[in-house]
Image (spheres, rainbow, N blue to C red):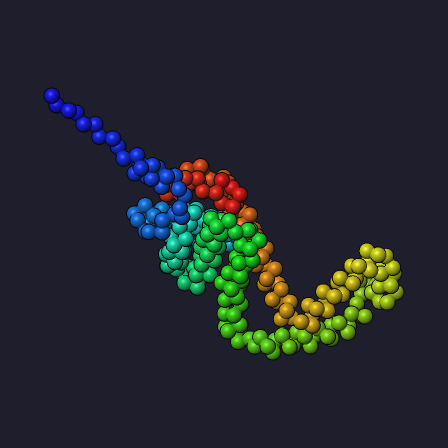
Length: 269
């Protein structure tokens, strides 16, 4: 009489495999074939957008195109990891350099790739948008605004210290000559200012304009720094808002990581 032996499956290993498959780790940073192919495709999209922005010199159109440039890097970094986003940034700079030169390529794509990778990295770690905007404004100011400014000073042989001193000296002369200001042929003197400041709103407006004018004209370096900071914050905020709206409109299969799990971008899932 033969005895049949029934082997029972190892339920512990099956349970561990199921649990590990349900976990949501960070996307792999290894550059496998699919990661390289996906990086190349998204990188080409960004290069085409940058070329379109450079070759079609329409101010309003250029502004709209550049707001969409970080979204390919955001999708890549969300799906394949931060390392893939950074490598794609470097590769896209090399590719665009063949068309528009290295200076313009680095200035544009380092900012677009850096901001897109930063947005994706911060979104995965649930960092607040305010912190991301401040950090992105630092990157934008140092890599996008400051290099052309310094390059123009070097090419035009401008002494920044002497220029700021001249601006401050001329500002004092300008402030001294405000008493002779004329508006539509009529002198804007003490009587006009006194009448306008007799109203509460007019007094508040004049006080605000006075403090801004004094600070801006007598401290040109501080005014330049404030302008750069405000311009950077406004642009990075626009980049983030447009990126969120574009990510919201992507197909659901694109808003997934390499394992097919949905990936949210800040509050968009």
